[in-house]
Every structure is written in structure tokens, then in C-alpha cells.
Length: 105
Image 1 (cartoon, rainbow, N blue to C red):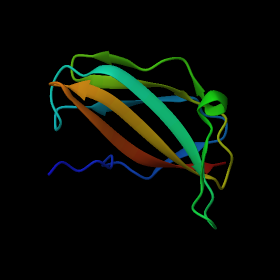
Image 2: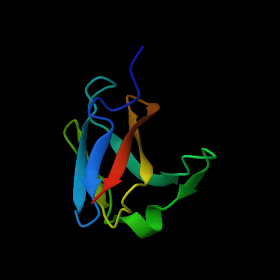
Image 3: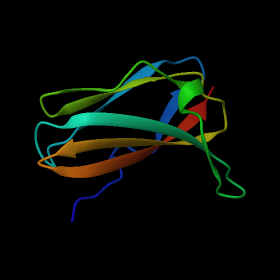
């Protein structure tokens, strides 16, 4: 069974940082296509997810070889937990990896 959570998770990202993350898809398969990225803020108290992709992602996801590059993750709020989801197709199968990002100062 392939682990879906990104090994480096949780990742800390400062409020002023703008970071494109890389995902190597080799554990799932080669030559990923159709990458899609979503970003959610997570309410720690209720566990509710809010889609903040339009506010906190800029640009588009791309795939080169076995590596997916996410859009830039921007404008995170200090003390907020985010879930990034990276969906892609490889070998006719659709996979989705995820990771946690902690907004810091």
C-alpha cells in the first residue's frame, strides 16, 4: 500500500513566503498527467475544511518527468493549519497525495 501523506508533512510556511512545492510521483507511477491542486484551511476546533484555493494559490500545477510542481502557495495566516491535495493521473489510475502546511510568522 502506498502512503498518501507527503513525507515532509507537516511543513511550516511563513505568512510572507510564496512557495511552489514539488511532489515526486515515483511511488505511484511515472509520467503523471492532469495535475490538480487544492488548498483547504482547517478549523482546528470543528475539523471543517474551507477551500481557499482561489485566495492562497496562484498559477497552475505542472508535471515534468515524474515531478509535479504545485502553484505558488501564498498569503497563509499565522496559526492556521492547511491541507494541500495534489491529484494526478498515472498509468490510467487517479491518485491523490496530501500534506499539512502550518502557517507561521
